[in-house]
Image (cartoon, rainbow, N blue to C red; front, side, top):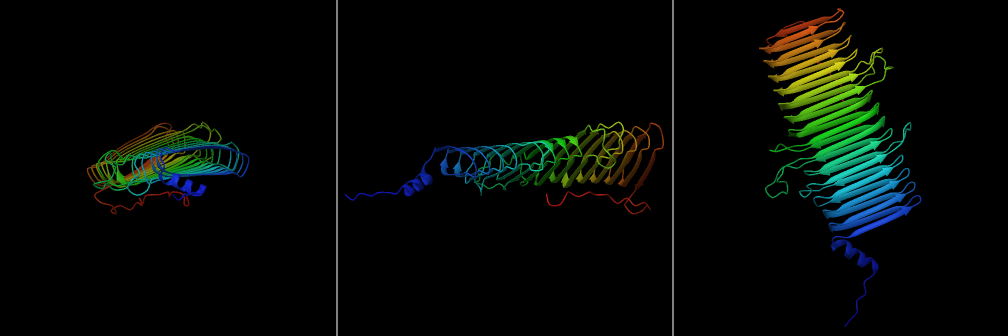
Length: 413
């Protein structure tokens, strides 16, 4: 019998291609190390710990129910985890120090249900070099968690669903979830969710930031029933939510506590809900500032029917813009403080506006075009309040310029 001898490389390739339930565990200490794990099959495990500077971890898995765990301690480390071709994969990345980058890609084609990605990055305060986390998940029922501490961090989560197919493994329908939690200064968080209009529970996105000068962006398109919640407990916070579908709910809460804020430097909250019905937007801005003029700004734009917008602002110098197009919309604006401004615009039928400005130097413009509208307002305090109300059968009859003012999402992010 002829004896066949396989090289070590051939044996490794065969193991990678066909073996299942494999485990790769390693530790690297020092600088500029590279760890690369390649596994194909199901229930594989790749676990790598690196301690040092400028280390690189690359994990690639093809199949289902696989696990990647990466733990990096040091500066300028890079982790890239790719899990393709299967469902119920999990990737955990923990990076501790400055200038680290993590990228997780999960899902491909029609077989990528129930994946989970979690990134934890711990940085430092008062630094210009932060950490970066990127998560991209394709197909349905995936979940992404990103937690960052320190300054100048960036997080981006992209979840792209696919339309239902008769034999596709998405019997529970799209239910993607994204959670981003940031603590520090100058952080940026963005969540993009894209799915398709089918019955059932849809996508959810939550961003929570604590610190100063943080930016949060949520974009949800091509789907119904999305929920976006942004909570910012910091000064100079900015939040942008864009929803292009039906039955969406957006809630933005911003709380600041700096007594040294200057005019025009307060929080910014913008919610756009376009081309849909039954949307609800709640915006709360509570800047604690007994002496200055934070000048926070909120804008809600709703294009559809049965929309509701509630805006609550405290302290002084706040501005609220609410513009609604469609039927049966309602807006309630409550501004506590003085030197407040509200611009409320409705176009359609049977709209209702309820405006309360509780202190002095308040000003407001209320415009309603169509039939069956009602506007109720209360202005109190020390006086010097002004209000202009315009109600017409259709736009363009009056001489006032009521063109909605719009602030755009920052370009390049």
